[in-house]
Image (tube, rainbow, N blue to C red; front, side, top):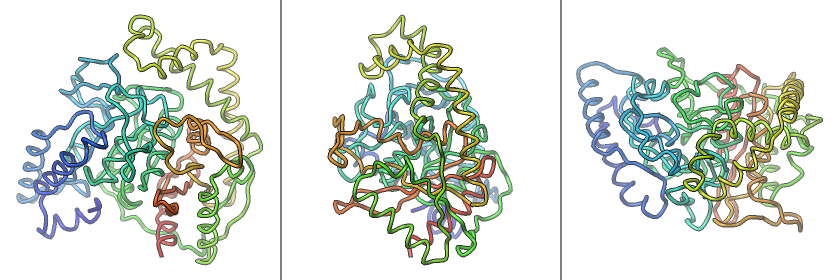
Length: 443
């Protein structure tokens, strides 16, 4: 059941929050031992809150679209009375005294918190393999990666262990697992949602946002996270008025053969519905990885300096090694990275001139096998971590809103994601476009 469907059924009296919450808890008990999506399940609190939401609605108090909705939370966010582990032994025993601002807004909107989901340790990785609690596994094939770092969040929604979830995104950590698991993931414009109350990876590039089953659900959760109390229904942009730009150079250079074929078919299908597709250019896209890495590593090294010195043995080995490498980012490299960020931001602004959104694949490959360090594409071994980040990290660097939605499956049934990126400060407009695209490609 989607958030939107649940909201209708709840108000018709066909379902209760208590029943939906119990259903989610039953799914957690049944599926999570194999998938490892949750670090901490808040069963007693969830049941108590669901009963309270049902009583409120019966008394005429309706908090809006998220009233009584079971929602999970990435264990990077502070929830009062629970340890914010960030999937690391470094943070053992660090109980949050208060809710972070986004958790406060979810509670005010009537959401029922199901628990804290697994992630790549400290959000420093796109695979969700490196966690003190073990890897999160793909919902359709447990031998494969869920994607990260919001992998537990994505799996919780893809399997119905929650109807929606809250994640974070520094280089693609919402959109990558959304694409690999076949759901919707939204990274809003930089600064549109607070990052306070969450353990940081890069204060420069961190974003927060929802993962959901549909674009409409993303609309509902996004506005609740923004604290909006009165929200118009999500409408679709007219397809015959849409202009989408494809940045082919760099972004379409390294793609799995099935991802390329499905992406091309999706573009053709959009054109048949009246959408105009044009090619656009981001001239310095090839410099993206270098710009991104020095900013993220510089920020991460500063945050982890004290704990890495005192408790290095408590980190997972791969994350510890990357943080130790991060210590060698020079101040001049960091400043050059910030200058490169501004240049890329201007280039994306230019690419978006006269069009409604950029359109590109979200991830170049379907979900790789857990433990794989490389994937062979076009006869060349490509590093898995670099591949997973390749198409998403630009919009963290530039701050433009970006969204992933399902665009089909491989012959083996593995999901693939279509990514849309819009004008800075116009996340709502991007969601209108995404809703139209979602409808068109599902016809």
